[in-house]
Length: 367
Image 1 (cartoon, rainbow, N blue to C red):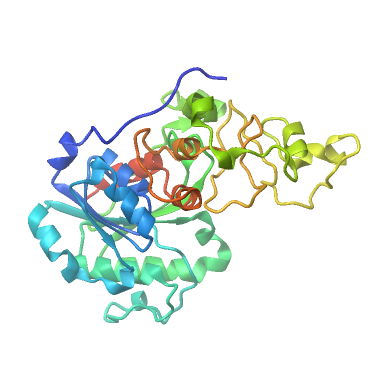
Image 2: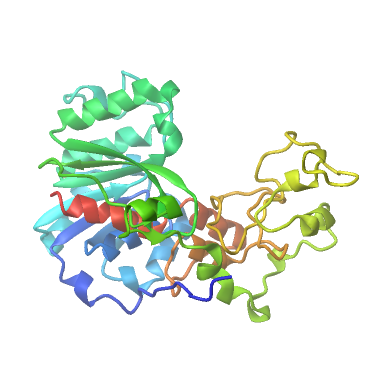
C-alpha cells in the first residue's frame, strides 16, 4: 500500500481566483465538482445553477464559492436577463459556460437544429437543448458540455450529429474529447465525454498527465496512475466510522468478507474454482460485491448504489463520505449538505474535480 497521500484544500485558496478576468457561469452544477475544477484552472465561477436544493446548499456552504451567486432553479425557467447584473458586476474579459446536462433522446425537431428556432425542444428531458439556448443568448467565448461516454455509442449518432451541427451553427469550433479520469490524476476509472467549444477554434488536444507502465515507457513525462489508497487510506480510522458503512450480519456479509481486494462476486464461483460456490458466474452485475484494491485505481463511484453494489472498501465495509469524495478528487476541506443518501448522489453525479481542471485548462488556453 502506497504511503504517499494525496489531498488538497480550497476554502483557504481564493486570492488568485477573485482577480481572474476569465469568468464562468455553471449550469447543472450539482455539488460543484466541475465548478471546483474550473476555479482550479484559474477561471472564476461567478454563478452556479442546479435544481437540487441540497446541491445548491453545498456550494453555498463553501468559502471557495462565497463570491458567486448560486441559483436554485430549473434551467428551463431562466434566461439571459437573469445574468445581466451578475455579468455587469464582474465585467469579465472572457466568459465561458460549463455544465453537464443530462443526456436524453433528442430529435431533429429540437431547438438546436436551426439557429432561428428560439424554443427549446418540448421534451422536458432535453436539457442539452436548454443549455444551448443559454449559450445562444449569452454568447460566451467558449463553453464545455460534459456527458457520459455512451453518448458516443453508434445508436446515438444522430443525436451527436445534431449537437455538433448546432454548435457549428452557433459559430463555435468544437473538440470532442473522450476521457478516462485516471489519465488526469483521478484515482478512479471513470469515462466521460467533453464537448469543448470556442469561437477561436483549437490547437492540439488536452494532454494526459498519467498513464500505464507501457505508456510511461513511451512518454517519461507521464506519472503512474494514482491509487485508491493514496487518496483514502488516511480516512480508515475508527473516529470516522459511519453507521451506514456496516455490513456485518447482513445478507451477503460473509460472502463479501471472503472476496479478495480487487475482485467481485466472480471470485466465489466455480469459474474461479471456489469450493461450494454461492454464486454462478455471469448471473450478476459486475459490480455486485465489488471490492477496491488499495494499490489500484477505484472503479466508478455510483450516485445511487444498491445495497450490495460496489465498490466496497477492501476491508469489507461500505465507503465513507470522505472516501467517496476523495476518490472523486473533491478537496479535503469541502463541505457537503444533506443526508447520507443525498450526499452520495451529489458526489456520485459529479465530474471529478481534477478531470474538470484539465478540461477547463484546455478550453481556457483556446479562447
